[in-house]
Image (spheres, rainbow, N blue to C red):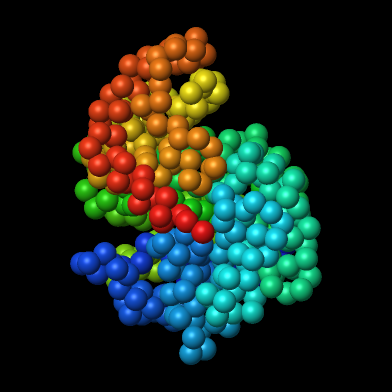
Length: 399
């Protein structure tokens, strides 16, 4: 295992972190608790020293399982990262209440890295008004939190603003070779690094899609031209670790073979270790993926705000992903999670909310026929079972 230093505190963290959002499951849909604990401990025994969990993961069970896994001497060998469920916070008192509950679930007296979960400009402004800075300062002072950070799901402008709004130790961003200009992106990565923040990467494989053993044929043909044979997972992870700004990469590992592969790749995770020719191949693969996309949306957001609150760029992202990889069931679930408003606190922004007013057509620099494509989205991503999916998601994210 290789390690990199968290800039502000000197912590030596494993370049591979264990993401605790996708534990192994039994056939009846329950978590395979014994197996999950075994896998977490195996990763720790092989050098992983950063575990990432959160209040809603596995319907609230993830933190409890992590707490159990760290008994028997494992707690002091790792750094625990968990997150304040920002969408459930309505007062300053709520912040302390959730933190204390999380400490109890994790069976610990301290959380090494405590993040504000899923920040964007709107949620940060709400939390700032409620006194989140004072909460973080107080929790650090009394020892319940060791280091502060935030995870981010918004636009670059808001990311920079949040970075500069509090003396964070770390930030967690979505980043992979397809998302170089998405959300924080490369510019945000560099912006945070210049301000000495540690950078934790989530979704390095785009929910596993970039790591499929058999990528789309056009992508496979690109990898076949490389002098060094690598798996799709290795190309994706090595590309991220090639960035010296990155502190560690989270991977949601629930199969033994995946854990072993990621541990092997992490042993080679040196910064600036890919050749210029290899970086060019990755760029070609990214370009090929984008050519396969259904909608030529750059995510610029010029179409927003929609009068009906339709989440146009986010909808097109999920729609493109479905057509890239063909995982329709997963896409329907992700679509429902992201558009139902349970995390953001906003009103639902489904494609079916579109009233064909045409305002977006005047704003889109790509001249995309947005209302027409939204109609296709309704057919492919909503339809039968939509109400049941939304109901289950609200249950999953309940207080």
